[in-house]
Amino acid sequence: MPELANQADLAHLHLLLNHFPTIGTILGLGLLLLGFIRRNDHLTKVSLEVMFLIALATMPVYVSGQAAAEALKGQAGVSADAIALHNDAALGSFIMMEITGFFAWLTLWRIRRVGRPTAGLTYTVLVFAVLTAAAVARAANMGGDIRHPEIEGGQYSGLFGAAAAPGSGFLSAAGIKDFVLQHPFVWPTCETLHFLGMSLMFGVLMIVNLRLLGWLRGMSFASVHRLLPFGLIGFGINFITGMFFFIAASEQYTQNVAFHWKVVLLILAGVNYLVLTVYDEAWALPASADAPLPGKLLGGSALVLAVGVMYFGRMLPFIGNAF
Amino acid sequence: MLTSLEQSAFSTWLLSSNSIWAYPTVLTLHTFGMMVLVGAALMIDLRLLGFGRGIPLQSMDRLFRVMWVAFALNAVTGTMLFVADASKRGPSLIFWTKLSFVAVGLVMAVLIRRRNFEASAEPVVISGAAKRLAIVSLLAWSAAITAGRLLAYVA
Image (cartoon, rainbow over the protein chains, first blue to last red):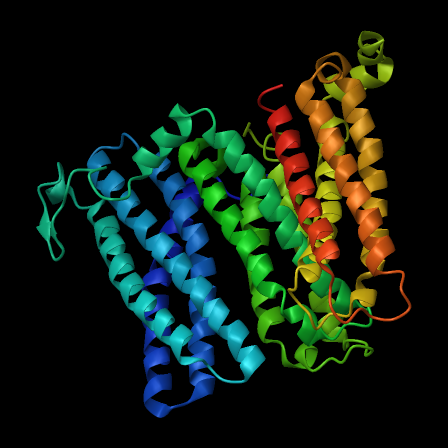
């Protein structure tokens, strides 16, 4: 299979995409605050959609960062410590970002059901978005330090205080890698959970999208909409276990064309899921009615994308080089 | 007999062919079937346990058809994968544990359908017995997946 991107392309992609999380979170946060001030639910909804999309966009930022680190390894004027510090900060902010994205999605899902943003969930998103903005700005700042020779050896004392030694923080990519590789039970356990999460996610996708396609009748779209959080729980399980695989053996994935396709399709599937969650025409669909053509296209593409993600995941060892 | 199965021309092709259409495709189809079969079963189980109450039970009946088609696919691909590795899988306790849990899951599906889907009227409340079947089904499929995954690492 022809490659999508080589190591240099991925390093380049990282430089291109790495501004999205910082700018996007601040933008989303600004819209959310504006929604509060103007008491405009529509603005609040848009801000939540932005935050969910930014959470999706952060996935390729993190994984391409790993490829960029490999490309930079051993180059003169680049501090390995600075990379490790940025990696740990990036991982922390990535996790925060995904939690924010999850709550943003959950709030959108509730809005669809009750007709307005509920206070508890909206404030939860606000708090996580503020924390994420801080964490992601810190990670971005440390990323910028990688190409600054004056900070070599971690002597730098910047806006966010003196840099700590790599791995000394609460979260460390190297620590997670050691944990996975030193305990033989971790990988098979994560694999098992990954397959269970996949089945749960696909079950939800199947019922919702087969309904849209018109093959499952007799259920209103609103009634199957109730099951959407289970799909996201399945995705959450797979995101966490998948990150364990990626962090423990990133060299198997960064240069793996099957993995590249998997990430691309996953992001498209995520966008599809967002549309499915907020889609007005589908929501109004009574039990016996046929979905309009856009709804059918949405349902069909969701299933194709989900099967594609599974296909490239399963093919990681065969098309690519993962075990 | 297991060894002769394993040494058949078919097994040799499946295992040693470098074609993407051999082992990788059979394995992927097996994963696809699993995802569809277990995914459909989980949705019915969740509905019986009280999630998505707005979905009429009868309207989920078609999912059983999905399950049987997916099971047929996995019976075929599973047999192919077994034949390729017969001498290793044959005596493996984990392998037979997996098949037992698959059998339990299928029996649960049949019982759930017979007791909740064949009535002419929509049940008003889901009985405790139906919920117990749903829980057994959830556990059986989870256990089958666990054992199946472990086959790749332990057995």
